[in-house]
Length: 192
Picture 1 (cartoon, helix red, strand yellow):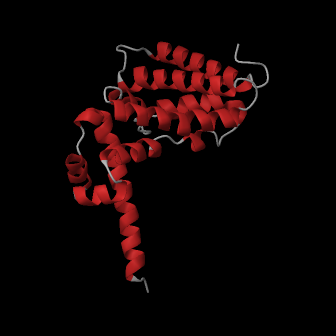
Picture 2 (cartoon, rainbow, N blue to C red):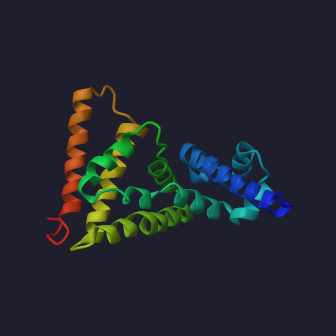
Picture 3 (cartoon, rainbow, N blue to C red):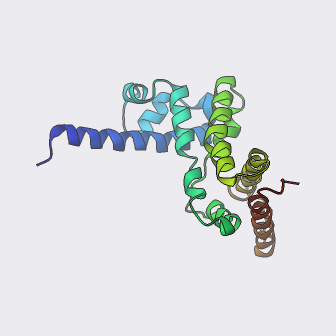
């Protein structure tokens, strides 16, 4: 027998997940300044009061949505020796909705949102990757990987350069894999 508290908790978790998913879409489509709590609540099939109860404010929701969209732990869970290829495959997979670059870019015009984006990017992306990389200049190498990954996603997925032939895509992908893998493998040798 399932008690009422279990049902309510399960519904709350599903509602929070739905709100975060919708918020990621809205923030990446409209930007922080133009996204509204009411719009997000309506698209999520809930009330703006509930959104505010869960996340406190638009800024709190933006932070939570951006944090949830940066699965760095999943990226570094694979094999170190195939990290470059694995990352390229994940970033170029059309089934993988990658929203952080747009959310961050569209937040840059609002000082509060830009500060949140910088903080989340450092905490969730750079710090975790730097710890995993280890060795000399780990933070610099993590920043380089994050920058090149953002560029790959932005130009090949979110603002695709057209026309982009299969040969060109293969060349860019191979270049990305090599540069990223070289940064991973350079632990203890500097990022030179």
